Length: 198
Image (tube, rainbow, N blue to C red):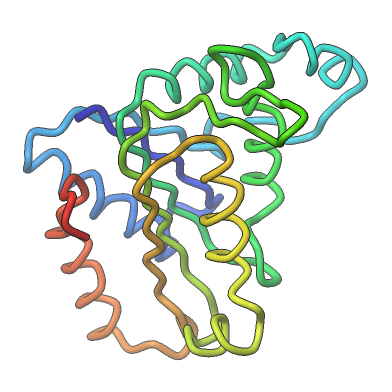
């Protein structure tokens, strides 16, 4: 399988970065092919300008990173998002990635018809969203509307054609113990990202 990792965190000493390293170690150990998009390190600009918006309905862009990332998406058979939750949702950087890279047009990320959106990224057979939050997991799910799974995972990514979607969350990060963090990283280091039996 050809994996694409989309990593969205600016700090190399963050827990999210430790998750990234665990995922990379996991895939390398299992001899899986993967590419990493590090949105902050690559200085992706998530902001739409007038020219980018003008080009949207033609499926074109004037941002070379958009072209590069869309090609990566079309080549991938599995995708792993690694991101924190900020204010109950994905960061603006990742939202901008979705906004700008997902181009409308046949053979791109999606097409729009009278009946709705048809996802073109059906080549992505396995989809994983790995998130962290300072809020406990039960609070995210029960009191904050479970937006990341309900909207991002089960609506947005589904609309784009990404299949077999899984959300893996580590909540209560601020008050977690070192033992809990190590246990989670160990779990990720051994997780079977290509299994059809999740």
